[in-house]
Length: 232
Image (cartoon, rainbow, N blue to C red; front, side):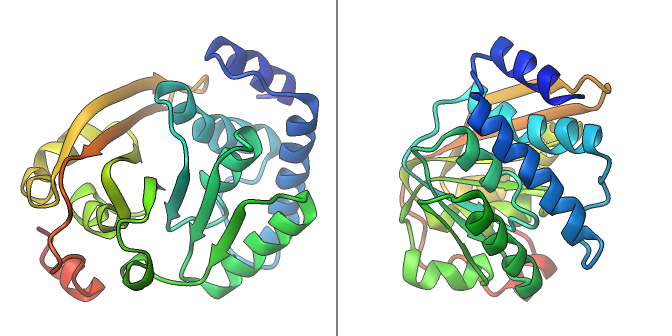
């Protein structure tokens, strides 16, 4: 996918990318490729693949649901989707939660190089970040972090009541949703939208949107070892 094709596909989804936004995505791509030679940020490095499988993929949820306000991107990694969301939606206030220090260094370099404001990278695990930021965010998202039973406990305690949890998933999303029913019940999340799309390359994406219907019980989240060993 070229940047011109990205603009056209986004326009079909109702998202109009201005030239200044495309320029920032281009520079972001260059930084990703440069830094990836020094540290493991992504296995996808070819420009056209980055545009399709990272940038376009990350933009899709913004076309499916009106997300606004304060956003937390849990396990942001190389900045997907949080940095892309900030470039496309300058109005969003975004916190990138990434426990790996080297990746946070990269994220801060990207933010500085692109001149982005209203976005920050914090080198914390989400279950530690929640101590000072419990139920603070209007929306929480995560992409390629963990299965939904684990992911929901990492994300939902950060979310305000009536906020949106956007889980970016692939072809197994609905089976993960079924397996996570107990976790979703305990954490008071109801599924309100499924975005089912295919990338031009044919890969399937299913993005799940949940609304938080009540406050999270104080005992959650548990320590990460417990979450992983015994998911809800």
